[in-house]
Length: 301
Image 1 (cartoon, rainbow, N blue to C red):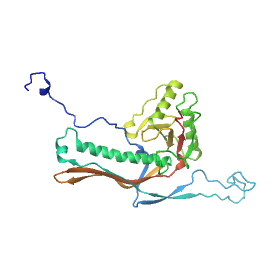
Image 2 (image 1 turned 135 degrees about the vertical axis):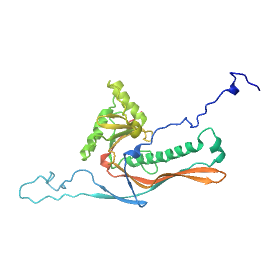
Image 3 (image 1 turned 30 degrees about the vertical axis):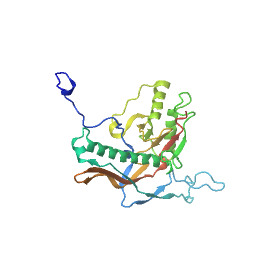
Image 4 (image 1 turned 180 degrees about the horizontal axis):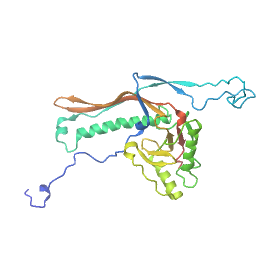
């Protein structure tokens, strides 16, 4: 039909090519690992026993013999290591074939969106693997913490979700003290949690204790740090499960051995279309478990 001024069919349309409607939450744990390359898929490494060297207790002698009398023989102290073997994991995915016609004339930027989101999907899986290694989750239940060699305990009383008996500040100080006791310095450590625990923490600080609203960190976009409290950096991630909070030292607690870096490639079927593949190969190693603390039962209700 013929349209006159002001009618719908002759109006201009501003089409936004980049699609919206999905989260842009960063995958950030990789930034806190000590990254190095591995030339083989099987990784043999040694985990040194944490703490300070001390003489073994013997019958009738339980005190230290390092501080001893003049003229005495030196006491024997021994360091120990645990040999570990890890294997590289492959993170690998591809898109459906996008026809050359869809790439050329679709309103959304089909190719660009697929490449970006495919890379984000691979990086998210690496983030989730960081969580599994740090919390020592079993292979069959990778999102369920099972801390055995790290420092660990349950949250105070009824957890962070109980405004009456919960005490996040006491728990954070306990975590720091335990890490200190093994000879690591937790000042500047990362305190990582799900957005649920972050909500409980903020409510405790502001509503329960009447503190002023903490300032957000200026480097949040680069590091994932949202605030600092008690000398540690708070990181909030949906890749960290709820009902537990972790503390670890960046560049010390976790190492990442990279066998193949994150890479994308176009698989072209001439005259038909393109699909995009993305892959990365590597593995996270819990090299210093006593420099970490896993606080459990933070959400009891």
